[in-house]
Image 1 (cartoon, rainbow, N blue to C red):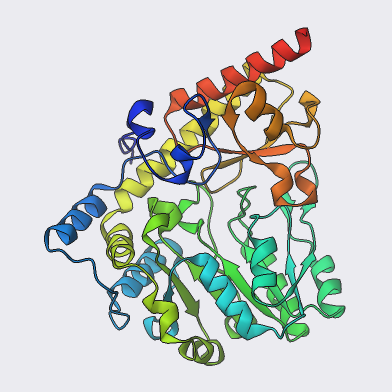
Image 2 (image 1 turned 90 degrees about the vertical axis):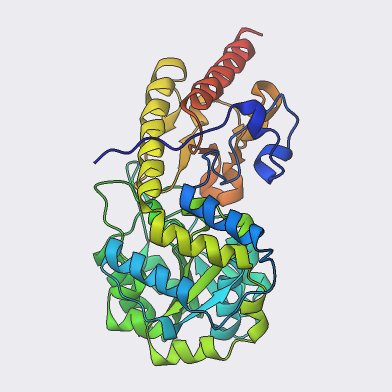
Length: 390
């Protein structure tokens, strides 16, 4: 079934937004960096938020209200065959808070936490914030696909690391780890008596033909030692509304969540509760249309690069609205995003922010109008041509 693509306002209207994507740079810069969508909000979310404003409903969240957690649980059941129990869930402002608060309780100060670059840049900061030490085990890259280095993770845990911070689906690569890989990770972690925090914020954005497997479903070991970080913020463009969820599957991890200070949940936003509930319950058709629009933009980007920037390599991921571009063929140095911002006035995220494997790479946001993709490639190609002619 096909759905109409989500509406995107003209660029002049987008520039009136106060969010980071559209306010961080001057108007001559085309912003394709931070992971915000240009798509108009899902109508059910917009309607529910408008009704909340009409009733002046801008107070504190009711942390005992389970409707938002139930909405996620029902979405997980219908999309992924997973039925998390509401009594083993908890609320927070965002996935970063879930990660930090979970790690604070899973490690003692100074212990190592494994991350797998290239990976979401704040992971490098979350771990010290939680009191831990970053241990990098880069993903294996055979030139076609990325996968977890389970042997490397095994060695890191054997050397003393006590947790793994997993990004699944992967940001920036769009990698969706299969059940076999995740089950293998769970066995490695269990063998060392360690823990996993699985950031699954991009899971609702898995592309058609790909199966997302929640970490907490892959084995008894995973259920025993894992905590999942879930949110509607990426899927429905709700980052500013501040709501995410802890999810546990074992009594041991659920007890850890129940011991969290009430303030961790109270800091979430009431608009986030409302929007999350509406998105997971009534926004699914919009979400499918958004994913279809992203896939169409990915195909468009491939065609545009092949025609105008054939030296750029783009390996399409199986999830997210983020494109991971290998720009090393343009000979712009380890940080091509900086050169592109200066010379082409296109803002991308530097690949270096994602760890050492990101040298020569940049991340581009695909959740925009198709003409924005065309304009971005045109600007970059023109700047490269001018640089070569100089």
